[in-house]
Length: 112
Image 1 (cartoon, rainbow, N blue to C red):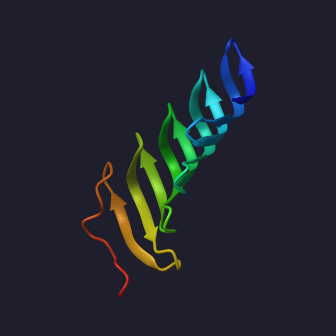
Image 2 (cartoon, one colour):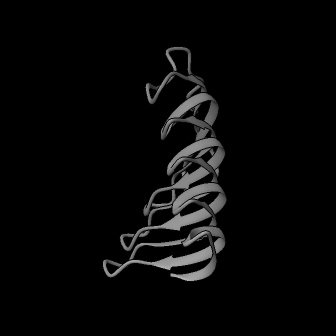
């Protein structure tokens, strides 16, 4: 970890690099991810957005290693609220209101 410390804990902006290849650049509060930042995994997945208490919370963009991406709202680490899933070419795959990680019942898929 490289970054800000206060009160003997990680607080403020910092860059964490895990031994397994995971990385996070962003805001910390009392040694947990809290605020805006970007997390990346060694397999190519990434998330850029808001966090609260070490979980995705607020607006963010999750990108899979195949190039698909979900752009929308999160709560407690799960997709929650309005969001859109895009294909790698940018076409809409699914859109609607998510409920704690469950895909929307009323989605608007793009024609194949």
